[in-house]
Image (cartoon, rainbow, N blue to C red; front, side, top):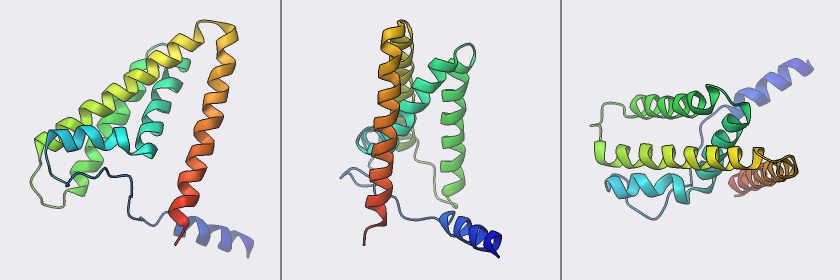
Amino acid sequence: MLRKWIFAVLALLCLPTPAYAHVDVQAGAGFLAGLLHPVFGLDHFLAMLSVGIVSAQLGGQKVFTIPALFVLSMIAGAVAGLRGQAWAFGEAGGFVTSTTLIHLLGVAIGHGLNQRATLTVLLRHMGSAMAGMGLMILLGSMAP
């Protein structure tokens, strides 16, 4: 019986909800709107920064393959979400540009802090802070 409840709760958590991370720019406003969306959407910014930091910590080919796969998956999701609408290259181009730059910023932070053993503790604190902020965003989205 408990398994059924767990499955039901997990299924409900998978239902889509509206995203509230949009900047005060009209959707479809072009390159600038796409560029600003991930920067001012705190959930987007933290997720992309974290991907860059973690990929730098993993090292090797993963430094760039993980962020590249993230961007490609994001593009695939955007294409799937169009539902017959025209592809707005200017808005999409800005989104891809800022996403890539945030990933590279995360890679630079992760690589820089990994160079000294004394600074790796800072990475852990940053991870804890990001997890805490993610929890705050989650709880805030559940408020009526």
